[in-house]
Every structure is written in structure tokens, then in C-alpha cells.
Amino acid sequence: MDIHILLACVFFYVQILQVQSRSFAEEDCPVCVSTIDKFSKTLEGETNTKVIEEKFRKYCRSSRIDKEKRLCYYLGGVEDSATGILSEMSKPLSWSMPALKVCERLKKMDAQICDIKFDKEIDWKTVNLKKLKVKDLKKILDNWGENCDGCLEKTDFIKRVEELKSIYVKEDL
Image 1 (cartoon, rainbow, N blue to C red):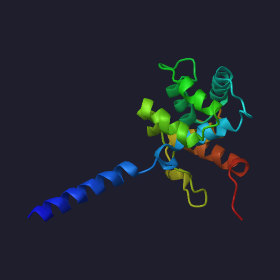
Image 2: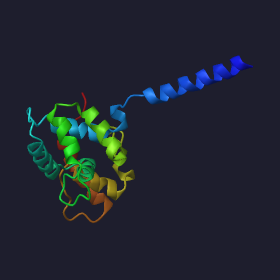
Image 3: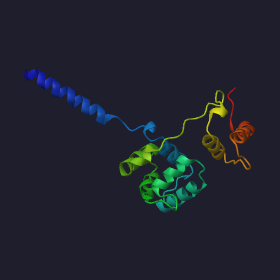
Image 4: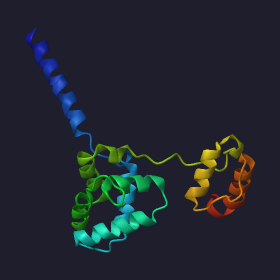
């Protein structure tokens, strides 16, 4: 009987270790990792945290991607941010810490940073634009940096997306 209790304890201990040893991966925090990685490539070896923070604010102002803007808001990179933990991002970047590790540290401070996920990519070969909502069509145009002046009906938005599709969608050969 004692051996069964011992085996059960060992089993549960191993299970706990496996759960704890799961490493942080890019899939856990995709928007943060890709944004911080993209931003860190623009730093060119900068080590001054104040300069890094100012460059991040400038990066956030120029960003056109909604998910990146939300990350900027959570970190304090935009004027209307409620909180500001930019120093927790700029210090590790000044040490050339990888984006994955920076985001892992940021998640410990504010878990909602890793709740941001990218929207699913549209498969342009099979998508039926007529089945998309107007909201989704507007979002496509917004992501492209385009607008649809004079569009009142769904067919107007579909027509505009079709017109611009050849410019923004790269067809695989």
C-alpha cells in the first residue's frame, strides 16, 4: 500500500514539473513579440532608455496596425495610455534582450499584453467578398491605408477592395 502512495506522489510531482517547465513561446504573445522584434530592428544598437522610449512613441504614432496600436496603449506608448511601463520594455532592449524574453517579462507585469492576437489572414484565392461583413471590408481597406469615399452600400466596398486587391495582395506563383 505504501508503494502505491509513493508512486502516486512521484507521478503528481512529475506532472507539476512538466507544467512549470513549459517555456514561453512566440504563440503565447504574438503581437508583442512581432512588434517588439520589428521595433528593436530599428534601434541600431541604441542603449539610452529615454531615446528608446521616444523612438517607441514615434513608432506607435506611425503604426497603422490596430493590434500594434493596442499594444502601444498598454505599454504607454501613446498619449492617451492609462498606464506606462515603457521603461520595462526599454531597459531590456537597451541590453539587446530578445523580443521573446522582453514580452515574457512584460506579461508578468500586465497579462493583457499577451491577450492581443492577430486576426486570421484572409485566403485571397478562396475568399468570397460578398460573404464578408461591411465591417470586415472596411477593416481590409483600413489595413491597406485606403478609404472608400462615397461608399454607401456593401457592393461599393466590394468594388473598392477588388480595385485595390492587385496592388496589396501578392499572388503566389
